[in-house]
Length: 309
Picture (cartoon, rainbow, N blue to C red):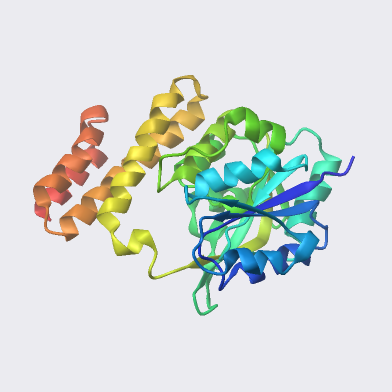
């Protein structure tokens, strides 16, 4: 049975880019079952842009509640058996859905799928590709040895994927039933909410399909919240991961190892952000919990680097 994909596009003040995102879904070589745009309380022409596509786009409007609530709202009304997501400022490559759909039709035992994607700046310049820039992606590419498909199921690969994943939200395909069972994206977090969901998904998965070619484009903005206020963003990152660690007691060991590695990096990044802002004592406190829980040379070096500024 061929899978039917519902593509969910959360949009907040996205009038400048929404049409491009929608068109990238409309032009898929494997047609989407439906396109759902969730207008998250926009104050610009986002809703009007979505309405221009008539019956090709289902528009949902809600008071501003954040991207997680918007994605979950789209999933709640979706009628496809598989979900795919796309942020309004990014876009899909033409075969993004087909490459996953054909594989799903051949292998009913895939729990979810992901793949490579490109980084572009706001001017459209290619900055790199995700799998090549992440250790977890390089591990999978090495095993693929030129093949376009790899099933990620080895413990070391899963741990590395959780620690520093190469597949972003717009390359993820997940059964709607599994998404609903997991409770969707967590609300109340402004950073790392996608990692929170993805990690819980990996913890419940045994075979993850990876397409080793670009499925879409992620646009990096200089004005993003992470760049505007790195300290606040890194604090929020640690807060989200702290909640994830609370849930992780019953996760498989590779997933727990990946979460621990991700938290170590998050605390170090928070320390660096605090250090750069001149708050050396706060920087030391940011990384100290890592040394307390894992008193090894790496964590000691992190503390010493904060002391040195």
